[in-house]
Length: 489
Image 1: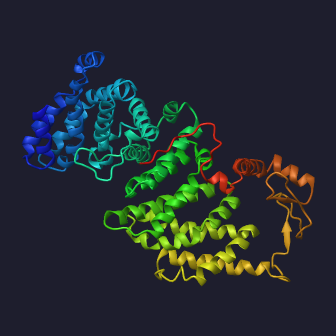
Image 2: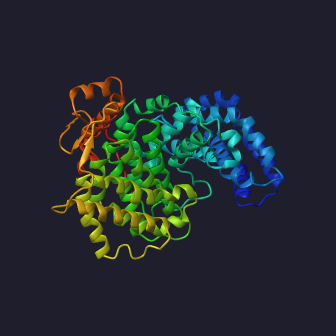
Image 3: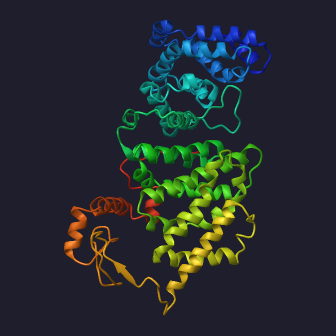
């Protein structure tokens, strides 16, 4: 055990040659043969847990050192072959650690924590693109995805299992959210389907419990000092991915995801960041604005937009302009500007949004909160579009304004009737379409396009009304039947 520890430190500190590390890796994998599991099972039954330190150290060391040496062209191809060849054995050890130790409340706590750390370090390889031939199999592996989800939940359930640390050591630097997020990203990039029904079993098939765990992770990270901005970016991306792929959008909103994501945006905008944190701050801005856009697109946007406006979204977005040039993915860098100048601008056709937007824009300009914007930047251009749109549409609110669009046509495509505004009757379902008669409405429903459109709008409106988008429904709900405990240091 002592010899293995010294060799591990030797490899991590770069004190060995490539050939020496390769031999060390083979030795470490040699201690992780699945044929040895029955012997270690007996050690657990006989309460000889100290014998577990060797496989724990081996898995931990491989997880920490492989990323350092896989970039070495002299041995990288052979290390990758070893990684693939040894995976089934390591996989059995991961399942063993999780099921027989980590999830056993009667087991010694220190051993449970060490086992969890070793799994995180090894699965941390998911974050490295050069092992894609190995990592591409993880999202479709039901057992491993169950364990990743279980450890992600455990971090929130029990404070001693938290992977956060104010100083990360050579033997401990992986985060639960990073592993879960990496698996989601790989599934998206390679078009591999994750079995969400399998993961839901970890959360007792409770959508609110699953969503609450995701939001609790983000809330927990916001309480840490210093905050791990990289992990915050992962947590926001997980929330965004769960909303799209796991049918959790409404449950996430109910658990306060929008409120918490806006808190992230405010934190990024009004704090100062240095070094690598500048890059992670930019990633947080992009991930948050992408999620807010998804929320507006998927749900009935008007009440949501008004709520976002009341929560100072516009000045916060403008303040985040400084971070956009640091975004490491050019297409995603347009998300904040699109939210500001396109999506918000499009909702000013609604009087309730317009009357709230007018004084907000005036306040921003009076306070000089847009003076720092660089001409030519995407945020600057879309800010101008938003102001121009609001200025033009504000004219319609003035007394005596004569609209050039004083007529309307029947929405039945087979009807050509046109009359002054206010003549036709509005559909009571979607409240969007107008008809000159019941016959035209019936024809459009039975033979036209209105049935599918109307049903879709009604479903979206009903989902929205469930939560009403009051501030109480956007922040954590204390009346939920299933809660996730949020621990703090």
